[in-house]
Length: 427
Image (tube, rainbow, N blue to C red; front, side, top):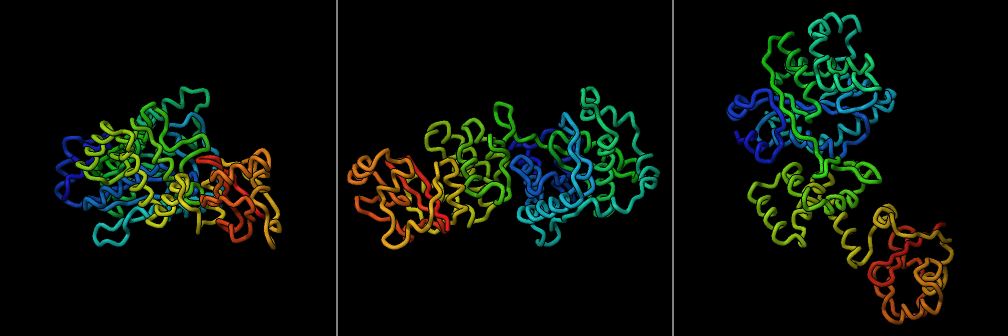
């Protein structure tokens, strides 16, 4: 077995464990079964919630057997840990859609067909739905002392706040704790991992396993993914950076990572990639001596985009990035161009303008706002400063036709090096 504990320690991925002295040797002497849980509060994971999923992947690559739980049952309540107010409860229909979205992403990250340590994907609603309220109180609830629950930081924080805590949220810890009991009974699972905000829930499960089964269980948490200024990683002004391409395109995903600040890139390389120690330390050195090359950010963006969106997604993201450095625009969809040029002024026009002999480039430059007048447009063209889909045009009589479309309905005009306009032609 590889030294998974040592690797996690080197990367800074161990925040707390229940047995610091015991776990390194235990993990090194045999394949262990562990689990991590993910509540379906949305139909996609985001960069921040990716961290525990990658932890499961690291354990699997080290020879251990990971179980990923999608919380179909716990998701109906919502985890109060780290929250200042109660979550809005989701409908069963929305919850089912969210569960399906998360399951698909987990199958992309974990290996479910690799022999003895193949990953297992479960939904805790599959066993929780069989309980009646009375049965759960009798069989499980009697094993959880209320004073122990009240001592958990996640509970104390909420109880002391103005928002307080409902009985529904208070029960969440019991449900998650029972997951550990069930997985130990059914799969021999002995280790739970999670973010540092899950410590109370993790230890509750360990205590419940001891009381109900007499089992010795273990817990490990990783730090939350945060920037050097303390703010959450994976958040922008526009919202979260999602793993689903429909929510955050491969280009947007890649751009977020390639623009990570120098002071955060080293941590991201350790937390989010599988690059070996030597390469990461080499990138640390490059970042210190030649920060302008941004080698750390490039490797981070390449590694993570490829993992989440595959080779095709990475290639498309790189192509889109190169467009801003003058690469010719071709073979893209309306969706691709719309995402790449989301912040560029756009103009909607009738597709009939491109019929027959077409529409003069001079008129298009004025209509798009790239030129203030026809005279300015002529001068810009004749001086070589105008581009159609990043191809220079120096003919002042040039006519735009449907042959100039870069996608189904769009043409990209550029004046100078960085001034863009998007023309959308509607039928």
